[in-house]
Image (cartoon, rainbow, N blue to C red):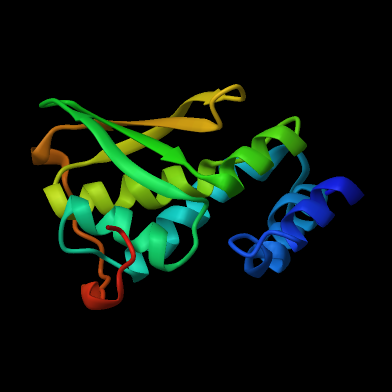
Length: 167
């Protein structure tokens, strides 16, 4: 994080609470993990989702909002074999603008594992496009064959939807 990005985040009332998260996520972890950052972030996201299993696809967006995970997540298209998600917001735009090899694989892992558990079928997500001009990230989830589903040993996590700011 450079000084300009730091000042922009610090002086933005919507973003300044994310300053510590950004320091760890976009400065420390890439330095420690090096070229493995994307793969390890993806598996870390899957690990979190096994611990915090959600009830339905809509709850994934609420989870992102309530836990300040990278912005606003919206399911934009669903077919029998794919689900497309769009991640947007001020912090997404700041991260895209400030970081050359920005990492959204933590989000992709969270989505993949939750889709696996919710739909009871294997699913893997991939960051398909990072659009610098629009400040958006497109994440695509491939849905596999339900015969290959193996449930995790996690327990369902109940979100408090009354405290959601998604509307």
